[in-house]
Amino acid sequence: MNRETSGVTADKPCLPPFSEEQQRFLLEDLLRDVSRSFYLTLRVLPVQIRPQISLAYLLARASDTIADTKVLPREQRIQKLRQMRKWSSPGLSKTPQLFQEEIERVSEAIQEKPESAAEAALMRRLFECFWVLSVLSDADRQRLGDLLQTIVTGQIFDLERFPGETEQKLEGLAGDDELDRYTYMVAGCVGEFWTRMCMAHLKELEGWSVGVMEEGGVRFGKGLQLVNILRDIPKDLRIGRCYLPVKDPRAMLDPANYESIRPEYMKWLDRAVEHLDAGWRYTMAIPPRLWRLRLACIWPIWIGLKTIARLRIANPLDPQKRVQISRGEVYAIMLRSFLAVRNDATLRGLFQKLRDAASRR
Image (cartoon, rainbow, N blue to C red):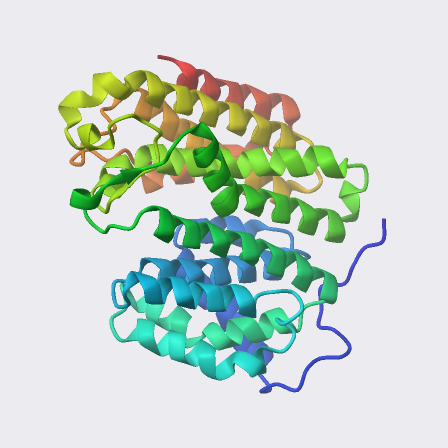
């Protein structure tokens, strides 16, 4: 397999001369401010794929900001997400100057009342993010564009499927297939993109089977998204969204009704563990010498399993008791994994302890 370069294309479009310092600000300083804990995962990635995956995160975070803002009515948010999907299409993303005014208008609208200073900074720099996308290699731009097309489609689905903003207009997903499709659109596709980017740029992965590893990457992403969904049920219910396929979503507003949905909840916790098992097989297929890539996969799996273990013994409908893994626990996971990252036997032992705890009812 031929390795690809990750630099700019030879036929770079005529665009404002953003400096290397500006690009570093986007992919390091701004990234740190908007990604919080996930920044550590992005920073540990091998240098060959770090800029592309970091840029993908920034653009996905920008689309998420548009989807969630309360400054714009729902229909306007959907319209602007459709615009962003157009801008990110692989054929058009090479010429973002064609959409510069549209991009800046979207950015200005969000900046009027941002949720945070970091989001305001990201929206101010949105055109620059698209500029960096435009000067990636053609193949990388195609991969990243495909990813954004899917993520934005998932965000539009979210807004259309759940038309309300409060618990008075609470709606639920129709069934298991709809939840599975949603987890693919907003997270499973990230594992697919991650796999394609790794295989394109890391010669150590020449022995990987494309189909097998892409499937593992998809399940990895789905598992992490399920953990988020199962942890955030109280918050989502109160903005009109029930992702868990149950007969009566409104009953979930009362924590006392947990036992009535417990079998369904446990089923999806089990599904999350199964997906993270696939993510672990994916991780252990990474050669030890790619220890940075291993760590970037280990950390979310181990944090996810610790979260599942706590969700097993909590009342996940109680809005006063949100399950969280502390910063100290995250740092402990990072230290243990760093010391063991090149030793497969030790890694498997540490994983098994976490998995056993996450599977215990």
